[in-house]
Amino acid sequence: MTRFSFNQATAKYWPMEDLVAGCVDAGVTGVGLWREEAAAYGVEKTASLIHNAGLAVTSLCRGGFFNQTGWLDENRRAIDEAATLGAPTLVLVSGGLPDGSRDLDAARKNVRDAIGALVPHALDAGVQLAIEPLHPMFCSDRCVVASLGQALDLASPYPPQAVGVVVDTYHLWWDDQVWTQIDRAGREGRIACFQAADWITPLPEGVLLGRGLPGEGCVQLRRFREAVDATGYTGPVEVEVFHAGLWSRPGREVLEASIAGYLEHVAER
Amino acid sequence: MTRFSFNQATAKYWPMEDLVAGCVDAGVTGVGLWREEAAAYGVEKTASLIHNAGLAVTSLCRGGFFNQTGWLDENRRAIDEAATLGAPTLVLVSGGLPDGSRDLDAARKNVRDAIGALVPHALDAGVQLAIEPLHPMFCSDRCVVASLGQALDLASPYPPQAVGVVVDTYHLWWDDQVWTQIDRAGREGRIACFQAADWITPLPEGVLLGRGLPGEGCVQLRRFREAVDATGYTGPVEVEVFHAGLWSRPGREVLEASIAGYLEHVAER
Image 1 (spheres, each protein chain N blue to C red):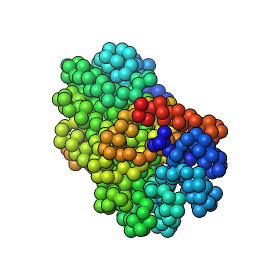
Image 2: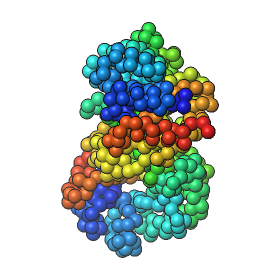
Image 3: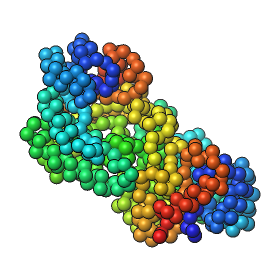
Image 4: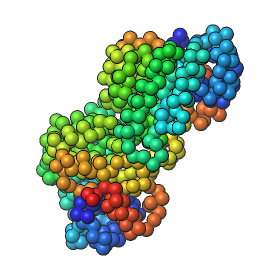
């Protein structure tokens, strides 16, 4: 259980104090946080609460959305919050196409340039930016970075301590190049975070809230964990699942189910 | 208009005779057919109707679903029907994972082997099998072939006159490797069919019926048509859109809208 981390989005409506208490009671040592939830509780107060409980923050979601007005200041604030929270990694969801645009190449170039503009601040703050490739079904409206290979290409101009990538099974499982690209990500020292969620169908309207807990779907989750480990990755394994049905269940029950899924389908046996 | 082809799935409930009359009246010279619709009207009868009207059948959808019992006989029948209809190409939607399986590699190997088993019959019948990579959001339940590069890899053991690929903008637009792979597909002589549909959001529940007519979404459709043409492709440009709202409109209106979208967003200017 030392590598398991509970991403709070999995139990979105679980109050921060209950989340922390629940993790401590369950023997969980790491949590992945979201900016909105940390801000609602207070960033400094969240940092104290979590560290006083002996938990580590394994990542902060999310920076990115480089197609929106004010992205530079917003992302600098996100980096500062990650530093305050002690999160080693700020996850970047890069944003989709600007309204009315079809120019995917330009949007992707914009991501590369925007990350470059953030690198000095990230290095100063000691926070690694982590480009997250999202499933291609999100390409137009959430993230123009749609494969691990592409994320690594975008990261390539920058030092790995400044820019890494997120390996999230939900987004990458379909890609026949993913094993090669995980090897490459490890070789290049860029695996900033590993996240596990399962793929289930049918997808709901809007497709955002259709993930499954580990074991509920068809992803070879253990193979993914073994592949990142084979590159030398020893970091956290975050369970991060967005699902409307899951969000309606009590936080402790969701945490228990996440741990059970992790142990059965992801963890070393 | 000589290259425009109307895929009948775009006006799913338009009766065959009305479809043919509508195409003739609109000056359309090619149609893409579906097996279910041809069977309902009668395959031989469909062939006579269409050829007497002076139309060409540009493709038949679909073979594939190699994970289902009886796939071999079913696909042989599909090849025979394509030959009867005068369709040069049988589009293959390869099927998803078998029920309960997580073994994506095995499913993909099975696709390669299944196609190999069909090649002699396809060559005898003079029908080119066309592997269609579907958008990765269909990977688990409809098609384990999720990128053009992967489709070309699967095709590679077989001669191009037996096995080609479909380039469908809806499925491929997100892929940063797609331009390279279109070049490759052309070089290898494997572009069997080019289909155009646009990407729109939000996706509906189940995601199957969420396509847009050319121009309604964010895909660089003309760039795709120019890319396939640049490889020497001179074949049909099929408009193939699945959308529940579109299906509720009169067939003639859907055809008109398809032609207008094609001329404005896909065709040479």
